Image 1: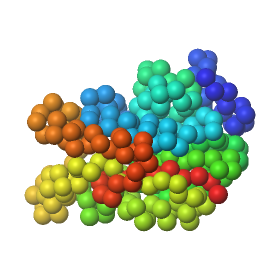
Image 2: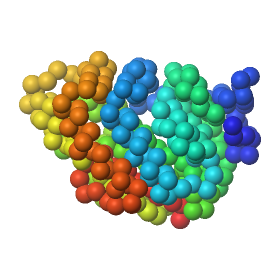
Image 3: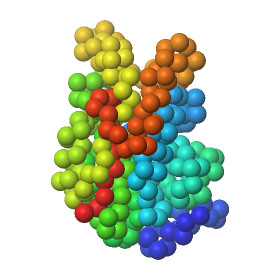
Length: 277
């Protein structure tokens, strides 16, 4: 359990000692039921499990110098995976349902707040992460610069985002995305915000074609209905079918590539590690 008094004077520890809170109330560009929807499928979804495996290897390959603050970490699925891998993780999540779900996963330290509301001191955080968060922020550079100020010199930022504007569909609209990124646009956003990019790679190499055929083209041609929480849930759940098994096989080499710091040139998402200059 991390003592957060060394990082902020705004946070108050709950009676349980696990959750820290602030008085701030905020709105976020994320479906109201988003955390609960993800909580229902995270443990059975190949997408969430594979992303966790990639994230853990990227953090092992570029280790933090202290506690890693997972900003906007939802239900704590990634934070729990990192904690199980031996890393000291602090979940920072504004959604109440996400905080409750994260507690049920046994996380040691949870902050119920946004980054701004938590009031972390400048030059204090050893490391931070934004896993599929930045695309939900209208002014992405403002958030990146805020994290930059909060990090210690050479403190690391771990980040994942959806890739390729040409894969946009109603699923992005439903999720509250403002953009999808290319390797160049993500690297530019990071360097413009004062970071040095140490590693950036596409991930989920097997998914662009299925997303294009099953989501993007039907949406552009007006042949698909509007995406809802139920339809997204059906797409994420691992049904044990031949297609799921083939997808897992195609993705299996990505974990080894991340561990070796090899960069992949194509995929449906991006994973990056940067440090404060």
